[in-house]
Length: 161
Image 1 (tube, rainbow, N blue to C red):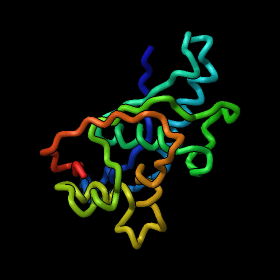
Image 2 (image 1 turned 90 degrees about the vertical axis):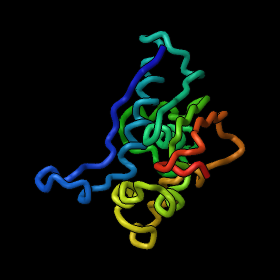
Image 3 (image 1 turned 45 degrees about the vertical axis):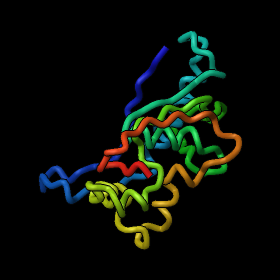
């Protein structure tokens, strides 16, 4: 079985019609994704899902989000309050397709660094730790699920490093 979720990313200023003005809303998207995992577990019997075998995947921003879902736990303070708090949001596998892993590095080296600046709400010194909190590498630990990363070595949007 496969399921697709929707999640909040950032809101662009529709009146200005510019891509240079946006309202960042991290960690809303990770809250949405974790709520979806908990919902899936709470409805596992209804949809014939094995609640002990849930994996996530996504490309680009979805890859980033998949990594955050897979690498964070309750201690990360990224669960949100999206329902089914009695269910775990931990997954058993992650497939990351060219998702960013280090937001500071992306800001420094990406050909679309302005997207990272908008997403984070400024530069690292202005964001009260958002770059670290949004970087999947922050959460790597021994108890993480297996992660498969697919990434081209000529990608200028998300640095291969």
